[in-house]
Image (cartoon, rainbow, N blue to C red; front, side, top):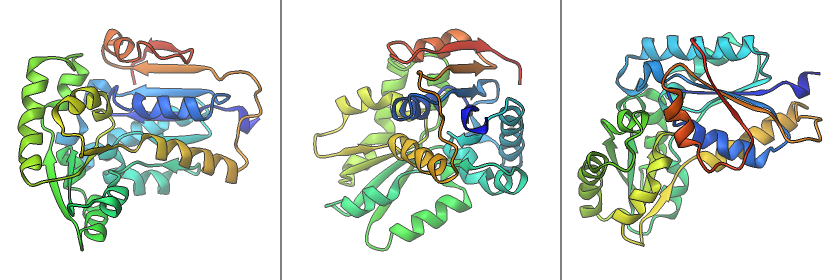
Length: 263
C-alpha cells in the first residue's frame, strides 16, 4: 500500500534531523527515511547549479527507496531547487524556508534578524519572501558562515562556536531586534547557546513544527496517511561521519537506526 510507504527527508547534512524529530513526534505511526548529505555539506557556499544537482541526487535516492512524499529539510536546497524537483517528480514535495512571516507579524520593535546561509539569503525565493514582509519591518540578514561546518564536526559546544555566534548576534542586538529567525535546519541545535546569549525579549523562531504540520496536511489531503497502528520505523543514513549523526540524536525517545550509505 502506498499509504504505508515511508516519508523521505533529506538535508545537506545532519541539521535536517531537527525537522525529522518534529515529523516523527507529530506522526508517530509513519515510517521515515532520512538522508544526511554530509559529504557535500555545507550547501550554502555552492552554486545554484550544484545545489540543484545534489537535491536531484537525494530526491532520486528517496524515490528509489519507495518514499511516498519528500521533505526538503534544507533551506538552501528549498530556495534554490524546489521548482526543479517539483517539475521532475510526480509525488508531493515539501520545502522549507525561513519563518519570516510570524516574526514580521509579531515584532514590536519592527526589526527582526535572520541568520541563514549565503545560499538561502542570496536566493530568488528568499528575496521574494523578504520583500513581501519588509514593508513595515526591517529585516537584518546575517550569513552564518562556518556554523554548519562546526555542527557537522560535532563542535556545537565549542569556544569557536560561541565566538562565531557572538560575532553574528551582537550587531543584530545593537539594532534592537526582538525576533531571531533561524534560516537553516542545522541552527535549532544552537538554541541552547543562543538562549544564553540573547535577552529574554528576543524570541527565536525555527520552521520545524510548521513543516511537520504541513506534512500531515499534505498526507491527509492526498490520502497518504499511514494505516499502521504501530510506531513507525526510522532509518537515518549518512554519507559522512556516523558518530556525529548518532551524537546529535542522543536522548531522542523515538526508536531509530543510523546507517552509513554512499549516495
